[in-house]
Length: 382
Length: 129
Image (tube, rainbow over all chains, first blue to last red; front, side, top):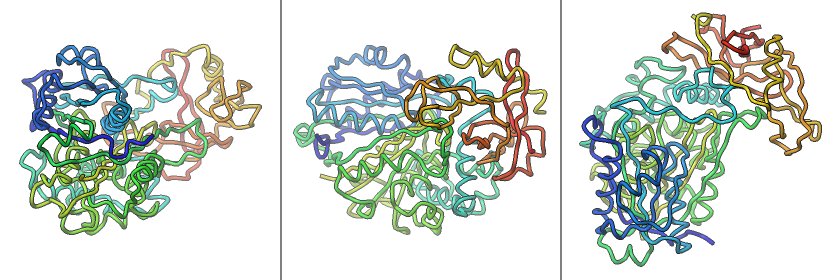
């Protein structure tokens, strides 16, 4: 069985807030759900599938009750920031199998307002918890080794932030709207070697939601048609410490699966949403998805190659997590939303890719240098 | 200061008791599968490679090389270096590099195990050899 062409993204909504001290987390979930349902031109009563991850207070059962949904299919897979890219794939599977016909996926939370609950620990806790792994230093270790093995430079990483900032200047909701230079990135304070502050994404309150449905229902609605044609997911960890290699991610497995199902190659892609928790995350994912050879990511991203209208691979045209939005420290949702905007022709005119008919939305979740998942979704304008 | 840092106490469980008992003697243990011969860390009762339950404890020399590291410039307890080191016996593991000039660390550098106290069993760290 394939999901190719069997599920359409009929509704999208990105919460405009970046700081929401006056709202509850459940309320934000409800607001983004309402936004996506209205974008699709549907009503809440139409929803018969619900997907959420660890950011949903209490998980799927309390959320379904709070939102007042009546669902016949649900999934609360949590793979960190890429959960929503996983949910999109799983929703497509469920729709293709007839388990539901209109699925809602929500993400929301407010890390900017208050502390985040701690990650739950696995069997490794006694052997790792003391060493102070954070996102910064774990992604820093990936960058350090990538530089060692392939000669990648801080200047090359900086180009990723520069490209994101060029896009963010046109997004009225972006948290950081100033265009920055390579020098600005290199001169920003070192956070965890070799990552500077501007190599890191923003921390924002907010959220987003999607409506995924059948081809028949999507065609009965008013929005431009965007369909799923390929999906892949994978996980990677240190695996007992054998042959440790931090220079590649689980994207080396999720990417080819998605491209194979879609019957397209990276060369065909007109627009790429790539989860940008850090600049190194983007560089490694571009290599792992096959946009360039392993080790050549630095050369690939340099000189504005990711800037819409300038380079060969426009990426994260909303400004991405590096400049615009990274709700709940989970970037997968906004990656899908901007890819759908591009395919609908609804991106900002200054960053809209001409004739954008094929896009990839990809992300990793968890900790890239420790245990993580990856999910790749290939989307097509129908 | 690294030495002033309060490290969490390992909780232990039936699968890892021997590891922590050995740590109290200043010994770093890892597991080896006698079916496929592969060593692994952190220790499991069933081999993560061939899924045999014929795993046995071995003592590491404590000698390792830095695979990668990152120097966290600020934290509640000051700067520190997180790292992966590769033991002479094969497995790589997450740790901190301690008791040294953090600015001089390099990938490929030789390090050796050093144990730091907790309220229970001590924890393995590494320091330049």
